Image (cartoon, rainbow, N blue to C red; front, side, top):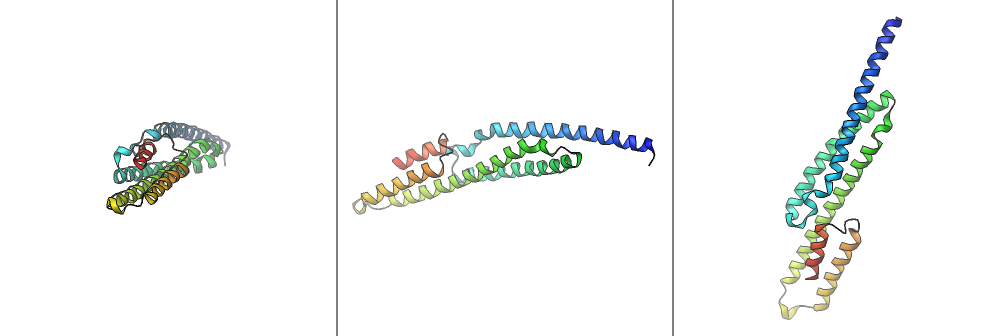
Length: 167
C-alpha cells in the first residue's frame, strides 16, 4: 500500500475516532440526565395505582433497554478504536436503573398483594374477626415492606403503603 494511502487511512480513522468520542460523550450526558430524573417517575408515587405504575415501569424499562442497546453498540465501536472504558459509567448507571425498575416492579406487586390481603380481611364480618390474626397479618406485611424495600424508605409508595397497613 502506498504511503499516501496509509496516511489517508490514518486520517480517516482519527476523524472517526473523534466522532465516536463525541457520540459517547453525548450519550453519557443523556444517560446521566435520565438517571438524575429517574426518581421523579410517577411509579415512585402511590397515587398512580398498581396498573398504571406497572405500565409506566414497562415503558421506562423499554426506554432504558433501548439506551442499553446503544451503549452496547458504542462499546463495541469504542473497543475497535481502542477506548472501551469510556462507557463504563453510563453502563453502570443503566444497570442500576434496570435493577431499580425490577425492584419497583416487585414493590408494586407487593403493594397489590398487600391490598388484596387486607381487603379480604376487611370483608370478614366483625363478629368473626380474629384480632390476633388481623394484627399479625398487618404486622407481617409492614415488616416485609420494611425489609424488602429498605433501599426506598423515602418513596411515596412505601410511606403511604405503611400508613395504609397501619389503618
